[in-house]
Image 1: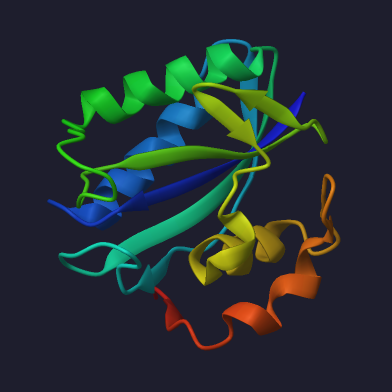
Image 2: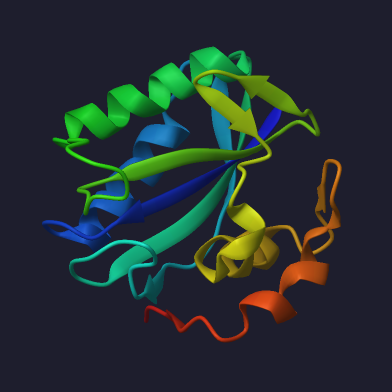
Length: 157
């Protein structure tokens, strides 16, 4: 299975946290890192705090989507992730954006990620590593770029 993972952080050393998350994704049991985007700096959306560092990774995994989500939550927890309220600033946030072309609707997991097409911090890095990717039930991801063009995003050197 191929999964695309959204990565973000805005507390602590956000850039190092994103780098560590990429390393941990590469080391997941039953999987391997296929591609990783550049890192991007973005202002918080529906949140507060410092700017975010974001990236997207593509992984091959033998884990089911719920098991992959559990593995991602364990990586977040290792970084001290807390969830005091919705959209709180975070040391690390890992989201399953896409999972092998599937549409998943479980209480704890919705794939494609329900807000991915509304966020430049997801679309820009996703399209960097998968320019022709299709979003199940929605079509080509690049069709949604114009709608997020007003969201500030800058590649981190």
